[in-house]
Image (cartoon, rainbow, N blue to C red; front, side, top):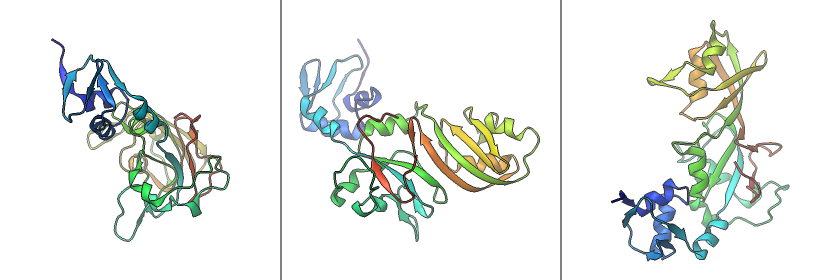
Length: 244
């Protein structure tokens, strides 16, 4: 007999949606398993089941929004800290980039549906993704994600011997070895980091380990999506044709 697992967990593991979204779809009767509609939360099914989302569920997913923000210094990615604002407060029609090709206005009542797909420190700037779509969030920050994140990092200090080599591979944070990175000098004071993970203050900690202090950090790319000419503090919609 095949192994049983919660339906919502299987749907999330297959990249169909997030577990929260799966629960909503199940409650609404939008999910079928081997041809049978399932409406009870917590239902366990075979991990090999044929799971389908009906046309109503698919339509909902097509209309889920994702926005790209050029986050300024002084804003936190998610929950606001003392005396600081959350980046989501910048997502309003006044701050929408004038060159955004999608003309839809954003409604303030919808903002609670957005969650940051990855962190960006309060003293860092650059590309921040906020999304309603659990599939995108999982793709960017799930435990199996291998999406590249590219950063431009201004530093000061003197690099230790073999420091650049160690930045690329060999450093550990809290006893856990970091994934292989790509780190190169752009000029005498700026490095380009390409990472496939995003631990808290990772780049700053990495630099400290090799004798450098970060004085400026900007994320310029996530996967295939570049920050480009999006102005600081402005946001735009992710186009349907754009894929991370």
